[in-house]
Image 1 (cartoon, rainbow, N blue to C red):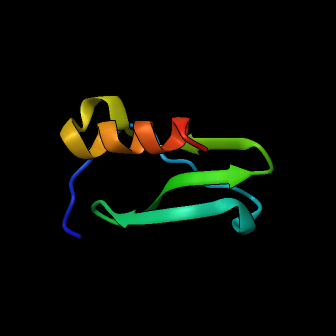
Image 2 (cartoon, rainbow, N blue to C red):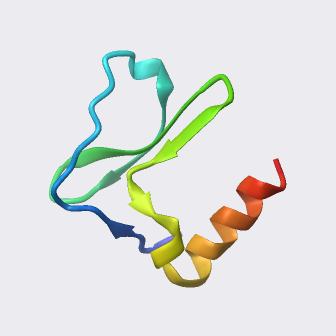
Image 3 (cartoon, rainbow, N blue to C red):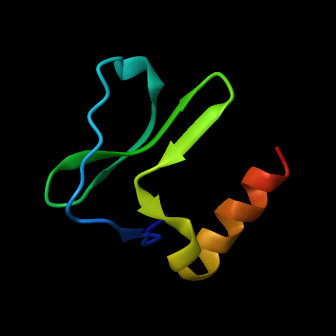
Length: 64
């Protein structure tokens, strides 16, 4: 939906198990921006620094 997120440009998460990838983005190349396995969920971007969309992601996560 053309939303923008604040990324950490120095790091890239490349999982051995591709099944854990839940979201990717084009950020100079295609990178993993979210991964999950069982009850563990992680993001490569900073939802807390990503304005209203990031706050909505945090709100949605807390409601899981």
